[in-house]
Length: 288
Image 1: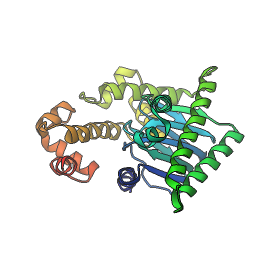
Image 2 (image 1 turned 90 degrees about the vertical axis):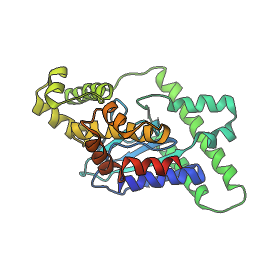
Image 3 (image 1 turned 135 degrees about the vertical axis):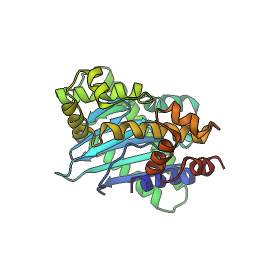
Image 4 (image 1 turned 60 degrees about the vertical axis):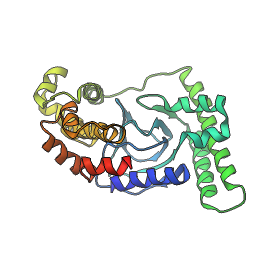
């Protein structure tokens, strides 16, 4: 299901350069670490969810907005106790650049240059305004009327300009959010894993490196992120493998060793499990 959703996003961006979802409530049984094309504006309405973006762990509150480049690995981990409601827009850079012009585009796209995402916190009035803007964008996307593409691009630039102004206002007097000790520990784990995932990491070696009990470490990571430590490492490696398969002619054996897999057979098996096809088939699909 999750792979299918990301396929839809990438397909929509190739075809129309923008993909809009408003007040989505669909539930998935798994919420994997993933990446996709373009840029993302994510708006949280309701629920109980932690979101990983790069090394950062965000405990979301209604009105929170995240902005990040789609190629940064990210993952929501919502709880089932309340409905999970969110809106998001994926778009390509050229879609904005055409309308904004070079100078304004450079400023707006800088919102998405943060390696761990950018958090914007809207109050109740701001959330209502953002919600209305998302709704208007979706309406314009779905109707077939003269000039609707121009209107849609204009509305998207206006949205990003509002967000840009808000970011300047917010970060002029920034205060760091408080976090529990568990969340602080998980952030430490994320930072270490993102730096060393290509190495031969075991749970025992990780426990020693970050000075945490192995059981507590595994339990905390799974509770906060929704995935196991080993699953997180494998997804990071597979995502790197996808990039290498798309952009290089390196042999599978080299990739296996470079990314920390025990041997090429294990790499191929894990790649097919996570990507749905073999490395060779993935390369053929994306290099043609």
